[in-house]
Length: 532
Ligand code: TNX
Image 1 (cartoon, rainbow, N blue to C red):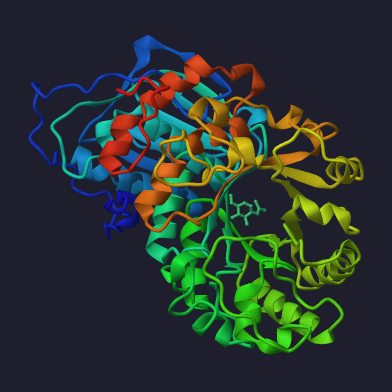
Image 2 (image 1 turned 90 degrees about the horizontal axis):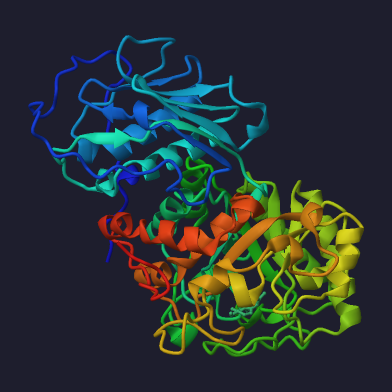
């Protein structure tokens, strides 16, 4: 069990007016100084770091967080940072949307940074006077604050105040992502995961600059999202007895889903909903007999077999169903993508698969969304804005390479590298092993742009680490499989190939352990990593 991260505890602090700035704890010259961190001790590795040992900054009771005046979004990022730093520092850290202060400050400013940082990057400067994070967008500012958290001692994540001097190493970081898309995926279908579990995962993802969370909402074993026009999908298809072994029931109401979307958006993470079709549909078909060609509902399934279900391709009712689902889901999804699955449709003929996808892809566009799907969708006639997600274990895929050549963007999730549900080694209690065992060095040891022939740097939108839930029930289970491999995938998505270095990575990973212990992240203590 894990305590919710401190950023989720909203402190209602009236920080708009300059408060009486008094030390919350008597300033003590004798307080211990937590061990200094280095400017490059960050995951994902920043593009450029320029340390300046003479210019460290100390957070004190007088420190204020200053944000660009007039930017509510910048103030919000400042408020989130303050909420993270206040409990352990015991300092008031007021958040002030003002042009200048005479006080030592952590400034979060929109504009004025190095040209290269783009829409997601940031520039971070640390001098004796303060920390300045500059970015072109609130997302960039937020990314900069996640770097700042890692530059502070792990104890900054502690729930109770400590009498410590909090020191930020001096210098400059210029940082921006290699790929625009850095994703994670959670499977709610095999075992349902609650809003609290999903948002706790969002907190962890956002620390590593992950900016998309793909939710696998439907599968053979369960349907996990409310659809008003087909109400039994959730009450029956997601009801008691659903999930693997019948012990993973539950579903997101639309209100739950909107809450997840908003929570993620506040951490600059976009939700991508997936409805898997035309296979992986037994939960819907066992609930509604009319979704079957013979009109007979198959029994619910709680095993982990794949590839046996298929929607009825030549029945108009199928497309009414699919359109209803897409319409309702698109209406509650502010993000650009809607994922239509398309994997392992072994019970659908190739011809039927193409017929189906060629009807469904335009429906996604009709409701204003950009389609994404597992790599099998490249067998259909894809619009050029559609995105294919590679999940194979090999290094060739002709249909994927052809789609890339036609201009479709690709997300890389090779199952033998990026699948967080694969066991670490033969003794791992959780997980599957069909794609192989994946130790931390395996998860880190590949390059998205050279993995599949014909799918190079320019074709790649980014990387994603899927976490399938056949064997996972609790948040602890999720954490154990995701940590420490998720940070490896996050670094592959963000950092330059020039910085790719296993020795450096495993050292920096080992330094994350105290933070995870304080956050009560149930990580796998891989023997490959020098944990501190
Ligand atoms: C394959 S990967 C699947 C999922 C399973 C997963 C387990 C993919 C697109 N389909 O249905 O949950 O393997 O690792």
